[in-house]
Amino acid sequence: MKYLDALGFAALASCFALACQPTAPPEGGAGGGGGAPAACPGALLSCGEVCVDARFDLENCGMCGTACAAGEVCSQGKCGVECSGGTSKCEVPASPDPGAPTTVRCVDLNVDSAHCGGCGLVCGAGNVCSAGKCGSSCVGGTTLCGNVCTNTLFDPANCGMCGNACVVGANTKVGCATGSCITACTGSFLDCNDLDSDGCEVAPVSDVKNCGGCNKPCAAIANGTVTCSNAACAVQTCNATFGNCDKLVGNGCEASLLTDSFNCAFCGNACGAGKKCAGGVCVQASFTSCLATLQGNGSTGDGLYMIDPDGEGGAAAFQVYCDMTSDGGGYTRCLEFVNTAAEDVNNNTWFDNCVDWSMASWTGTDLYVKLKDADANVVYAQKGSRNVAWIYDQITSTTGNGNQYDASNHNQLVTLANGDKLMIAGRNSNNGGCGGSMGNGYGIVIYPMNPNYYSNPKMFVFPYRQQVGGAAPRSFGNWSVNSEISYFADSFDSCNGVKPFIGSFDVYVR
Image (cartoon, rainbow, N blue to C red; front, side, top):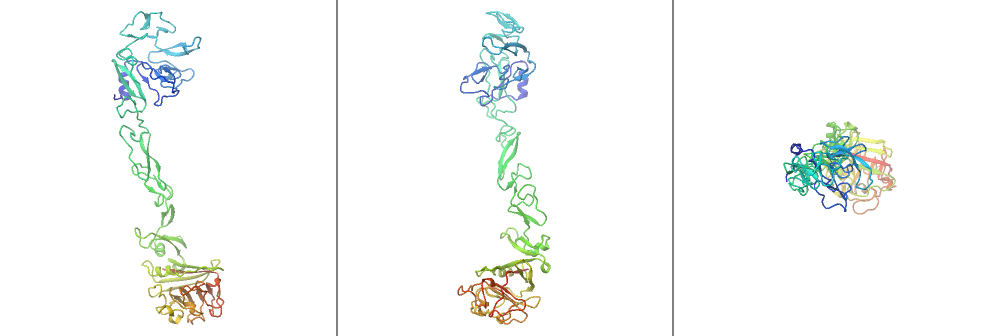
């Protein structure tokens, strides 16, 4: 049976006052239980262990468990202060038990044999109430069904004939029109499968498969789950790290809270100019270099930045420290060599970044070196320029690995702005001894204007141990683990005694 909509049902039911019978809740209603009758006769409703007429029952008005408030009556399945549909208020026993107190209920004085034509007017034995009068037979086109005169054209308990009760399904109301049962869904419920057995089985206000109407499913959404709310599809939840920031359903949870610069970490959290969202945190936008960041107005001063030398879509961006103030700014730090009272560096790759980055497409020939004490005070800072491409084994010298200990063998020394000379031994230089230790693995030496081998360096930057041909400590005079940076403004003789300096030495490229 296809259930009528509310307007259709109302039109057919308007010709009889008592035809509409609300259904019980789908789960059996309040009070339902294992002791409920298998079926109730006519249009009576099964509530708990009893059959009730939900049109007039004060404790089950319209549906099981819906009790009317004090002073109200139940008429046509609705609580109110007055009776409707041609019924009248009468004092009736509250229960069939002898001596039970009375209560006010709505009764039909036209057919009620206990209240025939008026409250308390009882028809005698063998008589029935028809058209408000007691008699031996029904009148006015009504038929005696059981002990009640009823019009089988309109009585849902006796529709078309006595005992032919219209079936009440889940979430439905029934009526009888011209001897035929009519049924309508209650509230907003719908019958979408055309089965009588489950009544009006769909709640279109919340059913994701029938949202707002039969066969109107909510489509799956990106990065989240969908729900039906108030008969409209809506985003229910978003997967972790995604958000429905535009409040639209069709594109689901469209915003990545890890990468969306307008919704970084949460909706509406926009990163400012020159910044982007990375891992849910607003960071400096990934320019190709520190210099590009500075020139692109992305600088916020010295500090950490993300750079992406090959741009979007290539290798991943990475974090670097940018000096945005020294010598016009835009320098990228390729080395931070820290010296403490302990042994700090014991590897032969510590200068690789400076070689790699000094040859990169995103850097030029500018160099900048900076010495800072343990309190980060700058003690020495000079600019220079490399004049050739660096490779690991030939940085400031193109001689073989066995001859890079002496500045006189370095034909590519970098002249700094103050005239000092910067010497850097290659990664696989392999000398030993006092002077030879200046050419064993990567090593940085800064000389005054006229270098003189081991006798007059201003600054050393070396790992404590040799890195090629063994791991013995270097052979400089008075050499110890706190000497990995040694510095003396007027130069020193490294074979007679180095000058330990606690702090850090940085190299920058631009």
